[in-house]
Length: 212
Image (tube, rainbow, N blue to C red; front, side):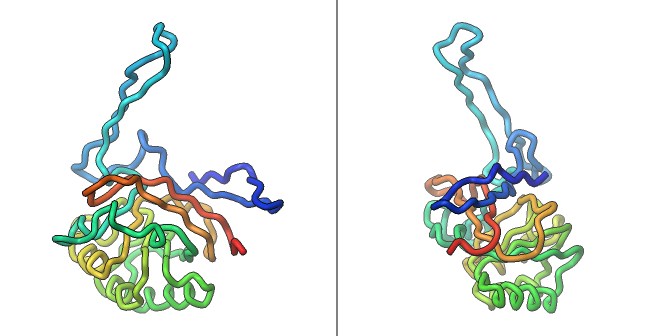
């Protein structure tokens, strides 16, 4: 479920913030990956000085970022990617089913026309085909986001990952765009700064319209 925060004040202007992240412990998990687990290490109610929680999870659980090294040998790791790739204007487009090359061309044109042509988020149950991925790669996007736990066919995601990550496009997977309308938004989806990791969970959110 998409959650809109209370309106936050910024320079006397009220800004609506839309959380597009999954809750971590109950998040969706790609088949075969370990699920997040939490352990209460200290509890005030049991006489401890504070509450303290430990947790373990896969770097690709729930809402997360794929860095190029996820599928590309010697590709950039999470700590190498520029924050400008995952923070900035984006365009949310709705699509269902397989996304063809012509669908991808249309998405890129809409994003560019809106002044948000570097990052595209796809709302809906979509499969990015190799042909669509090639269009996105040729458009030199910085980021592609989707609601599924993987971009491309769930049973064979490798080739689409190779095309996109090979073009140095960062992937934002497992976002929640229910009730988010098509249009231009400001995106923040910074990953945790894990040295040498190929992926990382993130807290992604959108701010509608222009920030100017």
